[in-house]
Image 1: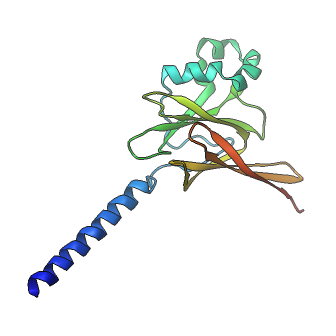
Image 2: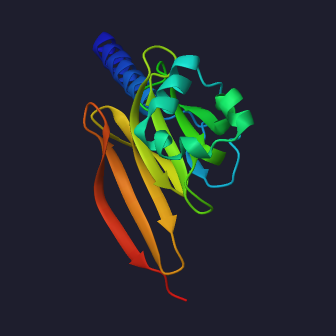
Image 3: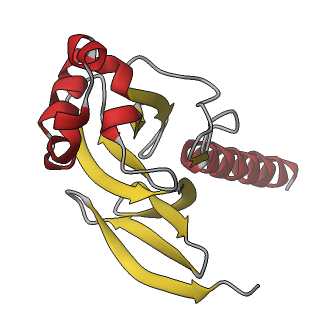
Length: 181
């Protein structure tokens, strides 16, 4: 009877420990930035690998503004981007949120953001969004964390959440809200 009780305690303890480990693997790093807005600098900037920089420079979005790059930016294109590391899938895969600066952005209240999956191993741009703020959610779709964006004008605000479809992020429902004065 005592052995059976001890065995139950051990099994319950093991089950609880496994649950904690599973939750920890799914919980984003608490030190990780999850919100990125306009003129703010990344708290912990990350190096952009050369192969990622090449993909950014070849992206259709960047090509729209490439002609606006000045001589210094053409000589040192890495200066047109800032990056921060994020873990969209799990703690073992490092992804990047890249924000455009100067010629790699749209305007005063609208920045360009790229999400680069597996940035240091086999990088792939899985989202581009022109917006003012970008947020990484703890919710997941197809293994990767959802991403939300917010943009406002004087009269309205646009909110959209992107879900990973297995290949790229796709927008979910777009919500427009009238700004009240």
